[in-house]
Image (cartoon, rainbow, N blue to C red; front, side, top):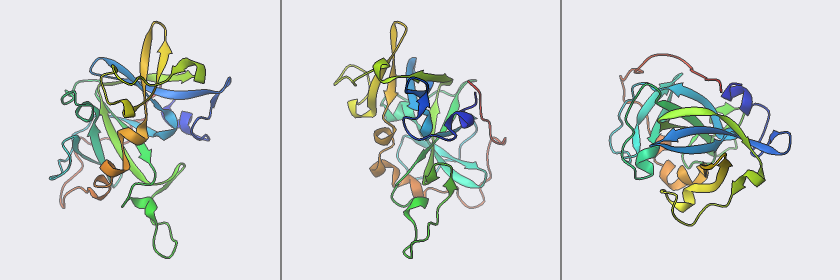
Length: 209
């Protein structure tokens, strides 16, 4: 199943039989993480990024995604774990965030919505850089334990829970905190410099689980 197909027709928490919610799992610095698939619009193979001056250090650059400038965040830097090393399986997960100050979903004064409209509404697309995408998994509420107060290696407010898988756990990220409104406000205005061309080429690269 492609990520695009998995996200179609549902809202947060909508899932398969047994009230399971679907999550995209991926690896970063040897750890396994998961994101609610509802927030994900597509997955791209790594491509060269255009660096934008005076952005936070966790912003590796922007990509030109079909004519739109999309900032790409290095989750490893965001988690204070150093920068991600680019390798064969390095991927960029595109997530859609609503309500970002200064983003397309703020609308105009006369009530017109000026932003990009997708199946998930309007808002800001953000890319997150990860070591490798794994697969889509379904977890029920019983599969996910509360987030620990400490010991997970990243800030507690970045974690919404710990999903049990076999004899291990997958860290379920709280995307609203990882990509907080205060941090993302500046990114909404990021743009590819005049004259910059899309690097890396290639179109949409939606993967299958």
